[in-house]
Structures are given as structure tokens and as C-alpha cells.
Image (cartoon, rainbow, N blue to C red; front, side):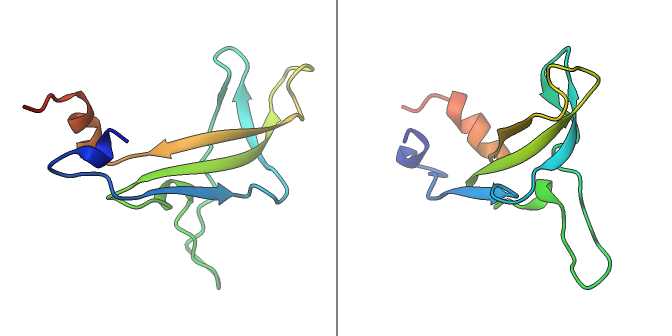
Amino acid sequence: MYLSTKKQGALEYAYIIQMAYRGIPRERAFDIDTFRINNLHSGRSMSGSTVYPGDANIKFEDSICIQIHHVKLKCNSTQWAGRTAYTLAIYYPEEFAINYVETEE
């Protein structure tokens, strides 16, 4: 809401994008020490009949984009290996980050 009220460079759109949300979860490495999913955006394909730029490139440069990912955790932990999880990736233009901390008169 704050970004939509800016006098210059106001935010007009925000998108929520389901990335394999309902399908079979994508297997991704999970770091049990940091609780981070590694290579969340892997899977790029630039050949064959379907050209897919990769999840990291599914965004709009003038908008906030929230991706919902469905993943299957791959690690050496009996507690976490094989579990499925939903996670978010949030993209926003660099100018939004700068504007957010600026002050306006």
C-alpha cells in the first residue's frame, strides 16, 4: 500500500504466480543447517519444442511478483528428506527497494 501512494514510481501491479503449485512437487536440495532450499529456480529449458526461460525469469520488471513453489526436499536427514513444502519467491524492481527506505517531503 505504501508503494502505491508514491508520487514518483508508484506501484501499480502485484502478481501471484503458481510455479508447479498443483502438480508433482519439484525435487530440490535442502540445507538442514540453514533451512534453505537450494536451486529453487533451476529447471531452465532453452531447447526442444518448448522454450522455458526458468522460474527466475518469470517476473515483470515494473511489478512485485510473488511465486508460490511446491517442492520435495532432498537431503541427508530422516526428519526432512522426502517431505514436501510450499515456499515463496518474491521479486521486486530495485527502484522499489530504494524508494521504500527513502523519505518524501
